[in-house]
Length: 286
Ligand code: HEM
Image 1: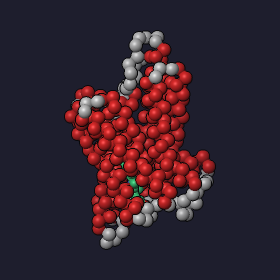
Image 2 (image 1 turned 180 degrees about the vertical axis):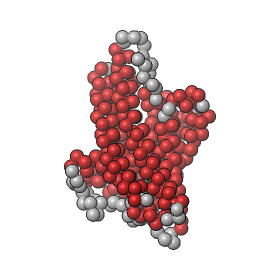
Image 3 (image 1 turned 30 degrees about the vertical axis):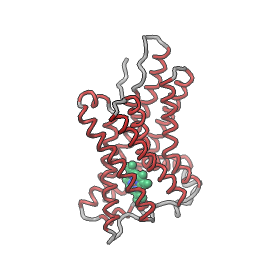
Image 4 (image 1 turned 180 degrees about the horizontal axis):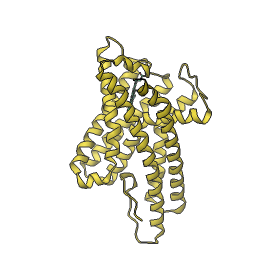
């Protein structure tokens, strides 16, 4: 049986049937596909929320409704930052949907021009989201959370800018192996805000309520840790996977596969909890 290929599952080809290397690559593909399936569903639900809630409230001429879900969203009279936030939300919807498309190798083979243009949009959108996010956190002020969380989110923004530049540079130089690695890092860093939301919902689910943070002030060690983990944890799992793909070895492949399967379950549970408790209520109220 051959498994469908996705960019993340592409690596070094196996040599021959029955080769242990081939078995290990198969394990890695199974783990990667399980996680990608859960992530695709979770990101689709996030995109539906962004388009459904922010899109419809904006088109209805009610941007003040953004404040139902953000502590410091629309501010009457603050034209410049309202425009930055509106742009942020528009790009957020596009980038969440565009990411899945970009990881689909069939698109690269059948329509390489679409891959290139979607890739340019993705990198430009990622940079604008990161820069706009930094401006909202450090210049506008009033974003949810405390300084420690803002540092975690800012690390995410800086890594997005770095990974986008590296992925673009390697693509320009036609170094496709390096481009793939940096593009995967970029995909995970761009997913940071989504990881934060599903991570928070999973944490609430596991603890049956807020634990390690104050729900009123939205501060505490659990949220500080999550603000950094939203970027660093997925990147660590990716490194584990890439190393297992590069260096043949049964133990590495099993470890990476098991980690990805656990990550897939956590992603699925966190995404469904976020959809039910965080994203669906404002959509239903509209
Ligand atoms: C790159 C991918 C990103 C996506 C897809 C994204 C998505 C979103 C979404 C959907 C919201 C609305 C809040 C909600 O409904 O949950 C939002 C708000 C916001 N985002 Fe982002 N974002 C991204 C990156 C960033 C970065 C890197 C930063 C900071 C450095 C940032 C800072 C903010 C801020 C400050 C708000 C307003 C929240 C508030 O005032 O409480 N975003 N973002």
